Length: 118
Image (cartoon, rainbow, N blue to C red; front, side, top):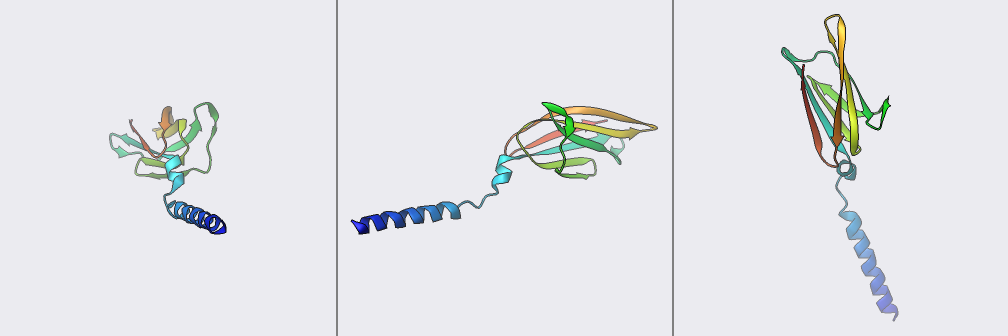
């Protein structure tokens, strides 16, 4: 009877070890999504561009601490939780600033692409 119990415990231990050793994927990337927003003007890409990301259901507070990168008119924001967001932007246009808001949705493990031409 003890050998059967010992054998079951050993099989359980092996099953647990196999389960943990197979968890090598980046599970954060599977639960979150990425935003890729491309902003262009007739002369190429915007030199100066201000942005903030806000939750659509509470659009009064910008999300801080984002994994964001802006390079040559392409804004990439990684590790956003699934949901609806606003991208608020402004850019210089002569002596004034132009601004706007774009609603977008993030899905788990996917990249949402936005293209905006000014």
